[in-house]
Image 1 (spheres, one colour):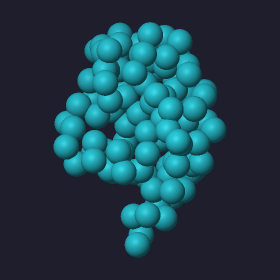
Image 2 (cartoon, helix red, strand yellow):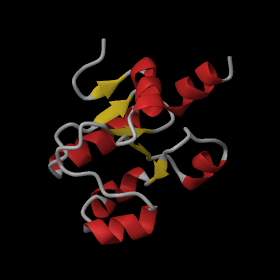
Image 3 (cartoon, rainbow, N blue to C red):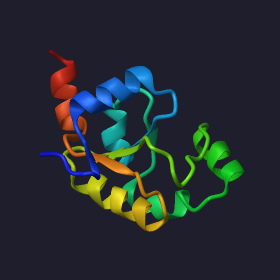
Image 4 (cartoon, rainbow, N blue to C red):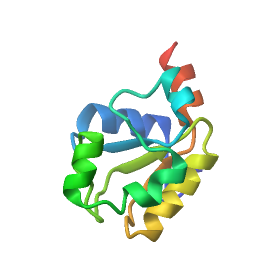
Length: 117
């Protein structure tokens, strides 16, 4: 069962299709991202989450090409390959004040399996 800080494949798929305000953050390594990624995601390695989410608006925009989400952003989602690093990133973001940050626990592994069907 999903908790308040988790999001399912179905929920994420619906958000990608409907919500232009979604900020989807891939926290895997560059090598992993180079092998495939969820469309629309931005890459911030889990080790950089605290640094990058502490940037000011302009610096974040310049680095990632998207607006830095506000602290109350309802659709800030992190993911990794299988869930563990995504959960760590979600907890880091929450500690910075992003109270609605969520982890896509299925990760890229589940996404790529479901998307290839």
